[in-house]
Amino acid sequence: MRRSDSRSKSKFIFVTGGVVSSLGKGIASATIGCLLESHGLRVANQKFDPYINVDPGTMSPFQHGEVYVTDDGAETDLDLGHYERFTGATLSRLNNVTTGQIYYEVIQKERRGEYLGKTVQVVPHITDEIKGRVYKLAAQGYDVVITEIGGTVGDIEGLPFLEAIRQVPYDVGRENVLYIHLTLVPFIRAAAELKTKPTQHSVMHLREIGIQPDVLLCRTEQRFSDEIAAKIAMFCNVDSDCVFQAWDVDEIYRIPLVYHEQGLDRVLLRLLKLESPAGQADLSGWRRFSEQLDSREDTVHIGFVGKYVDLQDAYKSVYEALRHAGVANGVNVRIHRIEAEDVDAESLDEQLDHMDGVLVPGGFGSRGIEGKIAAAGHARRAKIPYFGICLGLQIAVIEFSRNVCGLTGANSTEFDQQSPHPVIDLMAEQKSIQAMGGTMRLGAYDCVVREGTRAAEAYGRPVIRERHRHRYEVNNKYLHQLAEHGLVISGVNEQTNLVEMIELRDHPWFVGCQFHPEFKSKPLAPHPLFVKFIAAAKARHLSHRRSREFHSERS
Image 1 (tube, rainbow, N blue to C red):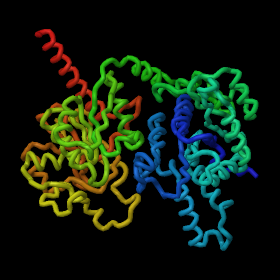
Image 2 (cartoon, rainbow, N blue to C red):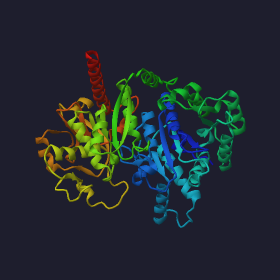
Image 3 (cartoon, one colour):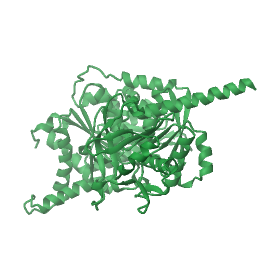
Image 4 (spheres, rainbow, N blue to C red):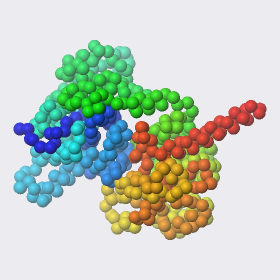
């Protein structure tokens, strides 16, 4: 029986995936949000992750990729980064749900006696808790809630989530629910044919669970014919105009335009019986961005010194922010991934001399630290634009303390608890914390920016608010010595008196920040720190090119 409450005012889209993982459900879900938002609708994206961890905060980047942090301090799946980059939304802990969170909450309710002695079961208790997370988000006043189900249809871990979304039409009415299935149409090179059978089997398995998809998004290496689309539609029991092609593109930020040209947004509005408040889609910003992608000529080279550099997703948001800033500066950004643990000082210096900029991202643990410190030191001495993020700020302070202030053995207590000069130390409120997971300094905090600094030039306003994820901070006992030798504290959190930003005056561009600016960068609104960093790298690149041309003419 349909329930009549505030959630029935919202429309619900559920995105599932089949055949294989890594088809791009996150990008597809974000694109759907982008298209609906372009029509003037208020949209929220949500991710259901079937793993039993409460959140990804304690998971290795080798297992999970980066941990994305929201303003309210939630440690979430990296797909939330896609959601924020493709839409204007600011997400929260309501937008990412794991199996661990669901079971934890159900067990807590059982312990409190809220089930009145009933046997607690997957159906209805687990599925009701899952649906409750969808409805709680919808109650925030969104026109459409788009929920992506992690994993692949057929995974045992995902079955409770699929059962829960199967039940949603009974709560809110089938006319308010849309099921979108992302699947694969592979090209078999030996036969030189595209094959639809994997998609048919995937949809068949979804239908066995009780879900009939309304729309199919078909990942394919190359475009297929209307005949193949009609075949897919017939055997998967969907309308012929509800089969869309998700062919490979050179840039993910062209995907909203690709789907719009096929009419996906119009089909979604029709199936959900929604009017476009804007009358038609406004994708002018995405068209301009696509044009800017094509107009780049020069390439700047960034030395990216980290310890998970072989993993594409470990620094996903940083890579995307660099790309955004490159487009804003009219250049391609080529990232040279340098494994901090594997370099010696001489080879590192030689590598970095060929770079237009050096970036050291966030991270934890002592592995590769000396390589990162060496990178910051060479960037400082060689006047190469440097950007240190979170740990990247801390190692810049360690290097400066050792080699400019003369503080032999300066270090972070994270790496050397017996350091004679702990210039980076565990935050006071962290010293009594034993539990892991959600216990760091997380989320958005204010930072007062010092006038006349690179930071002030970048932001153009005196107070900023950025997202954090760390336990260690610059030790305020050393601030006077650092400042005496030329280190500028360009940003401070006044409530805690913690250092948020540092920089050097006698340098083309040397900036470190304790927060993670990459989490707030969007293709249509690149983060100002990344924009200024790439601008400095571009200036170095052009200067070196002019120098080479001059010497070539002289010879």
